[in-house]
Length: 208
Image (cartoon, rainbow, N blue to C red):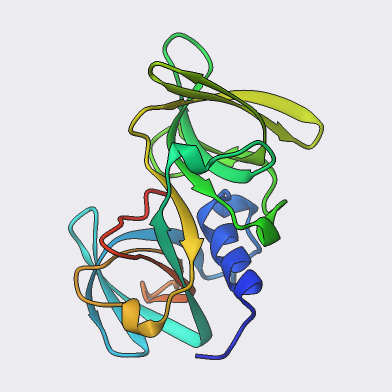
């Protein structure tokens, strides 16, 4: 695995995990991009075999120079005004948006994928990458005021919402049973390949 700066590795991972697939750089004409979420069934150094959340077994060829980043647990108390976050959300029945998960970006990644885009965590979900400008705490969680591209948006973060951040990781963290999320390319023959892997550390399931 070729060496990359930590900031570059995390930025590339984040672009794959927190932006719309259609908004990402184009792939080959005969390929499509998709996210593979699941647990590691096997890893041999060049191929990652994943049991997906749909129950399928996907073999993903890892491209030359591939990188790995860790996903580790954080908490609501770790979110501070000025932090840059990526939040997957769904519309609430009473209006506004409710968070499905929160990713707190390392400071060096501020501005990555800024804005709102469609996301595939759940049907009709969206991803908002923005700066936290205000936090209102309540009995049932927090309401964040998010600022992006000169706009503002309120986001409800209920108590119990998964909150994570990035951490250093290595090939040795890709062990059987570890949860991963991989932005992969699927060729016309069905073969999967990827340049980046995000793995949950210490039993964490990447909620993105």
